[in-house]
Every structure is written in structure tokens, then in C-alpha cells.
Amino acid sequence: MAPNLILFAWNRSLPGRESLSAQHFQDFGKYLASQQAAGAIAGFEPVFLEPTAGSVNGFFMIRGEPGKLAQLTASPEWAQHQARAMMHLDGMQLLRGVSGAAVQEQMAIWTNAIPRQ
Image (cartoon, rainbow, N blue to C red; front, side, top):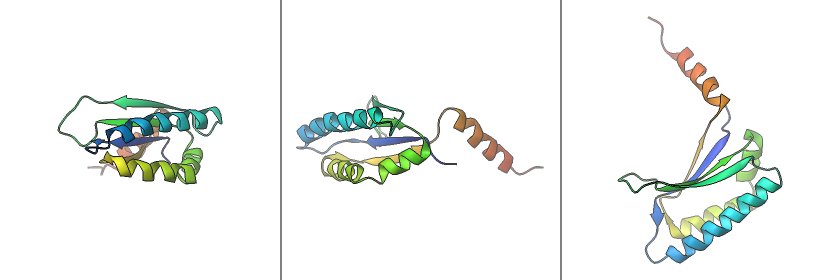
């Protein structure tokens, strides 16, 4: 099953590069807004998590059709944003997943795989 969401996640800004992170946050938000206006994604939402001992403290949740998300992440613009993020973010991650009705479909696949006794 193809993912219908991507989390562009991070732990924190690298020390001394906080201003780069702040600027890129704004630029990436504008980029995603342009992709939404063009119909390439269904929508996006930036999320900040409360600080924990975990490795993710924030992310952009990007929703869309699986094929369009694949095109998005294969684009030169996406690669440029990834490269930029790696220069100023600690723990940058791309996580793919499913939401909405696709969760029930995934759960049906999973429960069907449970060995019968």
C-alpha cells in the first residue's frame, strides 16, 4: 500500500545554525503552499512537539495522493530542500505513512497476516 502522507521531521537545529533553520522553515512552508495551490499535495501542517528525550521534536505533515507524493519527493526542488535541511537540522528524517481510510486497509492486511491457531 502506497503512503498518503509524509512527515518531514527533525530533532533540533544544529547549534549556531538556528537562523538558517528559521529561514528555511519559512521557505519550506511557502514551497508547500505553492505545491498545494498547484494541486501537487492535498495539504500540509507544521507541528511542534513538546520537548522529550525522543528524536523527533517537530515535523511538516504533508498529505496527498500516493503518486503525487512520489512525484513531489522525486523533484529537484524537494532534493534541494532536503539538502538544505541537512545543513542546519539535527536528526532530519523523512517518514512515510498512511492515514484516513488507508489505516483501515493497512489494519486489514495486518490482521489477516496474524497466524491462526
